[in-house]
Length: 378
Image (cartoon, one colour):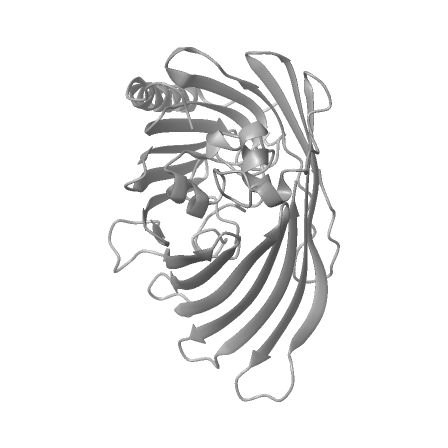
């Protein structure tokens, strides 16, 4: 077994204490009960992600409120047309099931070439989830996902969330222990967005990390902090910190995140993120900026801004701009990506997305992408 020098251990202990102090301070500012996973729905309803999901960071396993919100086609009001849908994922008082599946047709074309450079069907996602609640203060969450095997893109991936969530304490405090996703930035549905990709982040935002998270999520304010391995579980180098504080309301959502990974032999790796959103009538505007330095002249950075118009219940029209800026002197190109999308929710637990994306590269031919996606979140 490899032992760290005492000064390194002391340094880690000091940072852990410091992180807990920050989270405790944020928790002290959080009051009353907590309130969807996509930032769009959170902004529309003025709530935090934990309103619809067991995970404080949103997405994945849905609670009863989140299930009903999906059943009502992402609305707080029940639809008479679907009132006869009485399916219940709650098997008994302490076991609940969940299922996600996402299937996609994808095609692309590069400027200056003839024909499609890609045209394929792709089983993008398939997750079976279970929540076990032996008593009011403990929920155990497990997820097993579809294994995608390919020699190139995308890499083989299987979701394996498994954590215990201790909750229901004073001031909305919670403790999460196990494998979970980090409390950093906006947890978007589109993991290829540059603010979620490894072009900008030093970790894979689609994969879980092992460790511990503490925080408090109240009616408006929230604070979260995690200490995790940051890599392979037997490297004996647990040294990754992530934290997020912010506010959620009907007027606006805002959050500030930080990430720091320490290695005894390499410089620290860190990122910071600032995001915000607001909903006015049928329009929702969202945006996020992620960077590794506060000086944009030397920083690697990613950003997006998105406008969504709710044409009717079950129909959203989306326009989005993603931006990637490499560090000066690197071989990477600056990229702008434009998205136009129609999101149709014709019936409960069924989403259909029709999307067009155009990549604009500095010094390289532009590229067009076309998607048709079926998403069944249950």
